[in-house]
Length: 183
Image (cartoon, rainbow, N blue to C red; front, side):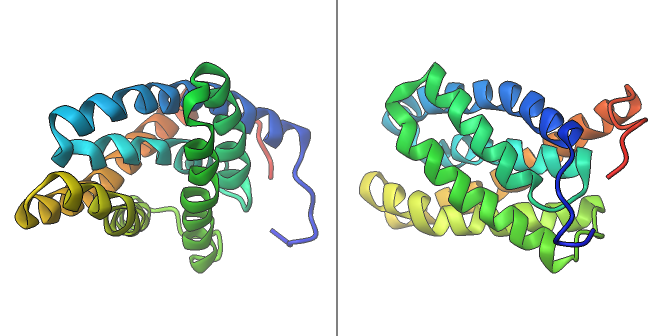
């Protein structure tokens, strides 16, 4: 797709529809974050990486540039309306997660959409999150080995949520969401 080509109304509507559902998932992840950090901080990465769902799902369904960032932004607005305590976290997810997802897709020239390629992107996203937020929280609440386990689980979470998004995207494709879609 040429970079000068505009996104169609249909593309934006699909991004919006995906954002509503994934925005609610992000809001729930926001609510679960505090209790997870308090009770089992080593598992926080699995909750944190749930915020990757909007961008990956949009990329799996639409397979074109900018849809990860657009869907992340719209999902952040939905999540902020549902759970306003985490507005800055949701907006940070747009920049960090959406940016990494768009960057990874751009490296593949928006033509590589295999499950392996997406899983590697999810692992990279998990590693970035694990070495930033996950490690900071892990070092605060866990011994060094627990912090390392937390980083590892954040990487695993990035891959798992990518696989979930890919499975949902395939199901939406089978249901006909993309049947008449043309980029």
